[in-house]
Length: 429
Image 1 (cartoon, rainbow, N blue to C red):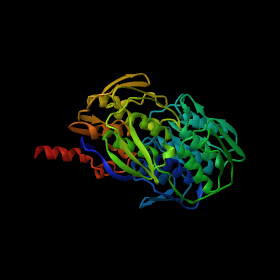
Image 2 (cartoon, rainbow, N blue to C red; image 1 turned 45 degrees about the horizontal axis):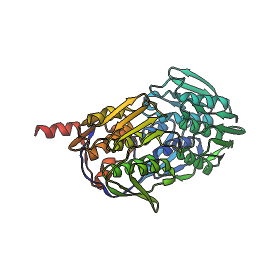
Image 3 (tube, rainbow, N blue to C red; image 1 turned 180 degrees about the vertical axis):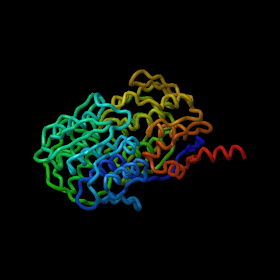
Image 4 (spheres, one colour; image 1 turned 45 degrees about the vertical axis):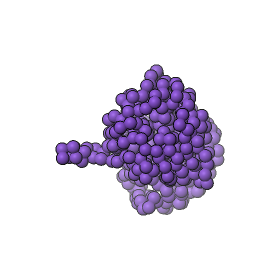
């Protein structure tokens, strides 16, 4: 199993380019199940999540070929509509094949994502929306089984206890493209990744208006034709590199950034003392030596994203005062707190809120990644910590960041990837 070994203290300098959005790529790949003809997606990052979904689409009868950041997709066989648990359990976003399979093939059998249950978890909103379109849905042996001769347009409310659902909106929007009549989704998620999905579907012949707003309207069409599409930049990867520059008091230029997708992030970072200035199709990042504390609450887009909460917390560990971080999207998303405490941070967690008292210096330590964004936070902390930090279970970070250790090293970070067996061998020599 791989791990990162980081010797902290290096200021990041230079330039880096942001890849296409992972969270846009996944539903767009699933939408290709509905296309007649080939789909070519450009600027696709080389990530574990992309490979996992490609493997699942392969079982569902789709050819997927990668070459130089381009992913070519084409359906060759529509006989199998079963997304098995062995593949779905690897990635929650696999649920986004449910709507396209149902709309195109009239049936879908998709394993429930691991650890989830019908009820208050967001997957119930997917089911509610598809039922409103006329699907018959039941549970069988841990699978969602959905059937429909022809879906019919409807007015659907997709609000949930923690706000709108991104993948639920994607599933219903995709299914509605091939439904008979008009569908209106109220309380739709507004994330840029959904706007990108809608633009792709419209390029294929769909009729979607209002994407990026809480009210999305879809006029059903009879078929969709495969088309090429370039992904939007990954705003979470961009935010992570911005914060990497900030926490090391560095100065870096980041290309291929949509700053309009990061307004809440840029505003909060400027409040802390991080300069984020537009530069062509990207941004220049620099940082004051004294960081100010702040209060932040994660919210659905265009609010501060939950996917950057952990990374911001790493920065606030070094702010001059007390900061408060509240996560209203995923109230239990604080697995990184215990690992930051191992590095000397002062954090008190109470429910969905963490209170961070800034300290002068983090100390390198062995830490363990628990999820994708927590992994990124621990890497950021390691970049600035005194001494050596070892981050275990970096397969989590490989899900969402393409060769992050190489790209950080190119900016001047002292970071390398090692395998457990290699490290043990080196220690014995």
